[in-house]
Length: 290
Image 1 (tube, rainbow, N blue to C red):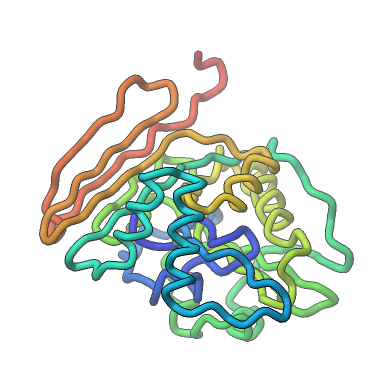
Image 2: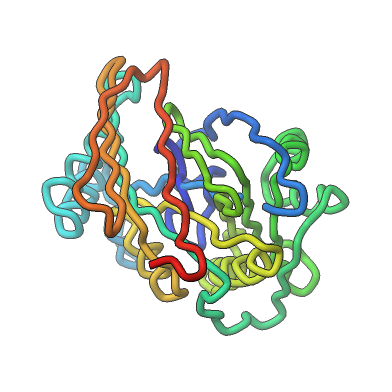
């Protein structure tokens, strides 16, 4: 999937806004949500090892080598291949590999960060939302598409947001068909000065409970396999992995592998990038389903 995918480089970093994945990609507008909300998968390029305090900054070659070494330690040869593919022009070669998670109203509720409240934002909050970096036109377009957003405030000032969309979500040349009664979470963002304080987990668990109360069975999210902090955070708050998507693009063609938990062997498909492809997400089991 082409873009932030899901969450963010870490659960405390922007989704498609300044997450290191380049400019936000164009999306198709879905049908209106009404009272129900949707998640974007966040691009999360690996970073090199943190610099020692006071040490001189590493040169470009050293940073690249550190990034490759980190990728190899975490994901072996596949991790290195993904980092190399992301460094190449997207028109030539690209690769994405991420896990898909579901979160429902039973998600673990983290401790409430001091002074932080979370609520649904509306068009009346556009000034607060734009103060976090998004343009007014883009936010208006999201509201008009029926998307919903929860906003975190600390001592009355905005410090984060998390958007939700129903029906479908498009990432580059891959469109995800979302089952009825479910949503996709995207563009999770926490202001730089507020990161590290548990604000994103708070927004995620709050939204899961609110959505469940509105009749939404679960929200879906995608996290890069190279993004270890977000993978750990998702597991800690009770998100469950339901599958994985691997996309390899070369020139005008792409190969996609989809794998769903408990559904046998992975399925592969070849498609033309300009035509794209649609991936239906299996519905969550209903009450009484085996």
